[in-house]
Image 1 (tube, rainbow, N blue to C red):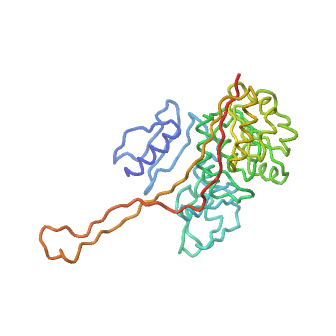
Image 2 (cartoon, helix red, strand yellow):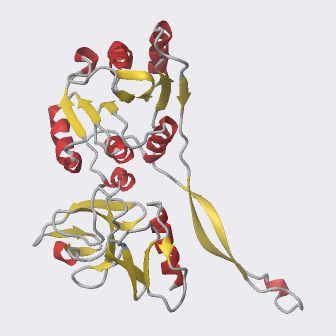
Image 3 (cartoon, one colour):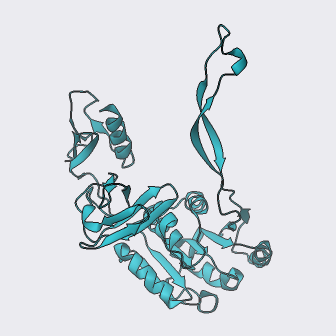
Length: 343
């Protein structure tokens, strides 16, 4: 029971909540430590199931239940690099090389459990929708910004709930989902040159209909249409010639707000910086490139030498855990240019 209890503590710590009472093998029900909260979790077989939700806070992103239901978008994890998104609809099924998985076999079950295929010879683990998983699973309409770059942007800028972000270049929506999670209930204004990408974004961002405003516009020519002056805490551009819209970036930005640009080519950075240095409204410029390396652990056995098998005081084969580097398909993604607006 203790591993399940530790998992429960870690899960509640993400919501800044504590669990009471202290661990005991005889206690199977735990509650939230915040006064007046009605949260309750009960132990069942190998895990704690939530009996009643928290009332000391609300979760709006993107579901507020431990059980999957029809209409939910879930993430199916077959392995660490085989992740797919599915919207549940009763009567339909998902076909994979691991078998056929009827949607009804997910509905009503908790996230994180093994769900068997229709022949019980393969399984998948359904996970709750999260931006980091969406980045891995999404169908790419364009080249995307990957999780290492996303995490650097969100943390270096210091995005927090209530901030306003302007994004030009929706693409596949990878970064947009991360912005929405970081600033909720703040506003995200995003723009794209192609109407079909805007339409698809509006469908995907349905959970944030009050928080996200997607528009079709060529911001290099028309600027940030319908965005009030001085509202943005961050302007992010993923465009080929961002120096053409610097004037409108200044218009929509708050004093001392952040300005971040993603560029794949060093020559584009030279052109952008040359224009920014001419403008008195921008401070210092920092260019960052992320190098992504992946590692995994595996078990190895070091066998005993034949020469010493009959000798005394010689240890037998040794088992140990080894960390090794894993080949990753992508190499160079792009450069991130960070700057801030002056007063």
